[in-house]
Amino acid sequence: MSLQELAGEVVRLALNEGATDAECTISEGEEFSASVRMGEVESLKEAGARGAGVRVLKGKRSGSAYTSDLSRDGIARMVSSALELAAITSEDPHAGLPEASELGMIDGDLELYCDDVAQLETPFKIEQARQAEKAALDFDRRIANSEGASFDSHAGARYFANSRGFSGSYRTSSCLMSAVPVASDGEKMERDYWFSVARSYSRLEEPAYIGRKAAERALRRLGARKVPTQRVPVVFEPRTARSMLDHSQPCTPFVAAMTSVIAGTIQSARSRPPVTQASRRVARTASSRTATGTATTPG
Image (tube, rainbow, N blue to C red; front, top):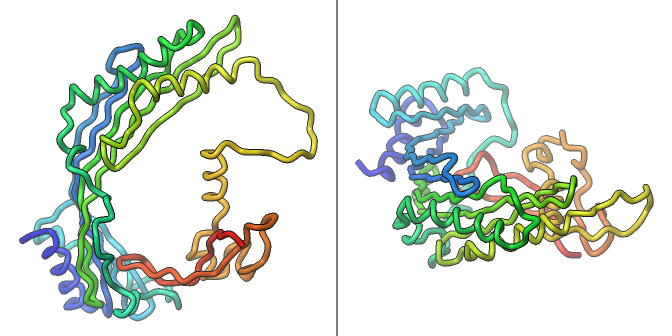
């Protein structure tokens, strides 16, 4: 039985055992991580994993369970555990699956997977990390130390099925390379980093560029000084600005349950123009709920 077929079988088992709705997600993948410091390998990890998760609904009560045991007995225990949890949880008026009309697939290749990641050999990935660190150390005499460099990769697949008729899967891949040099000038020491992440190895930045960029960022911190407390316009670095926007967005379930501090403030100004809060409908093919959420959009 394929993993896609197994996902459908889990849903059927849940329905046969008394669930009114159910959805299953199964994942499998291979991950790799190597870190080096001052040219020597500090850590090396290579692992494979498989697991299945199910969410069942009994009316407006839901329960979830997960297992790495994909045997018949393991699947049966997972479904039983989810049903037991659903029997004792409180009702959630927002619990449910998307309607069948909201389900579907996007045509075309979204480029979430590339074969070149799975084909990378371990010695090559370690050498990429070494080159990134060496580029940082060679950039300037003030870069005399390093907190290391790393290369990480992952290739895997996810399989979905639910009781509303949806069944689908997709493959994913990713690789990441980073360097963290330490700059010093007298007694002053500063560190910074740079990294590149992509779905395909061919789209990663070169190790030499990553090392040099990390060194430049560490060096520019030398001689930094505090400024007095004051009200002034602040321009954030792109990576920092993006993270602030990510953290500023509320979690959809809390907004739906009216427990978020911004619940009920949809369409109100939350920053200076042109950024406003906008309401949108969130529909997922294999998610915990369909609910009204918020998003930051240009006004």
